[in-house]
Image (cartoon, rainbow, N blue to C red; front, side, top):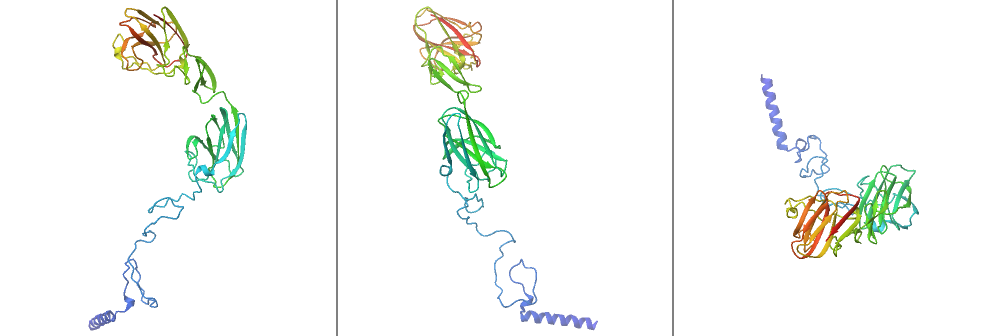
Length: 378
């Protein structure tokens, strides 16, 4: 018992002596991240006090942005690579390509740009861009050949080089598209699985009759429409073709009907558009119910009608369902209706209410292709 007590007093004395001496070997600096106490410290360099900056690996310094290759502001790192210029400066011009002709070029994506991010392919791969135009409507075949890779993306754009608009994008090394004269095209060539690749590009043109499908132009009093297969089909207008359509401004080009007697008009509905719909005009039918007429329409102008005069519009000779409506004094969707009917038998007989000029609208109940045959008797 005495030995144990003496040992406890001896240990307490030793601890008090060491504390009074302030031995550095028994102290830790202010950095609470340190967990090991060195009993024999290196005193050749004074121990400096630094604030705790956080866990190892976390960047707590202020992000002031990268150099010129970083397009983001301070805060996030989103390096996009060196920008060598805009598309107008780096595009390769193949010039005007004649119908049934072609063009070839060789290139490499090494040192290329990444200015166009296609809707397909990769956003991070450099491309080479070619510019061209054609002198006639053509079916264009573009093909890329390379010993470095078989996986390519072809992007087609049109418009101006400072703001090209995407036409199509395909992950292929060969593609076919339609080109129109008067349009500048840009073709981007981009590998999908390698950074640098050399290649050869060939463009071959096959002239077609027309483009794009659905486009129209006038040929005298007929309209010529670009149909399926890029072939031209001519449709006769009953009166006039203007701005690529029968009637075009349907009221300005209304078919005029003058003089007593019967007047017959034939032509193709295909060349006409849909300018009127009587779905919300319940004042234009004898049943006071609006008629949905989303099909093509014809407009006839009948000047100088007299009160009590009988007017007959006969559309029974064709096989279409048509609504027949009469406007008084004006030609517009909002003009007052003098008469109208959804005619099952294709005939409207109407007695003129008052002297004046009138417009007759013959409107299909749905879009149709085919010929009309209408007789108006005044």
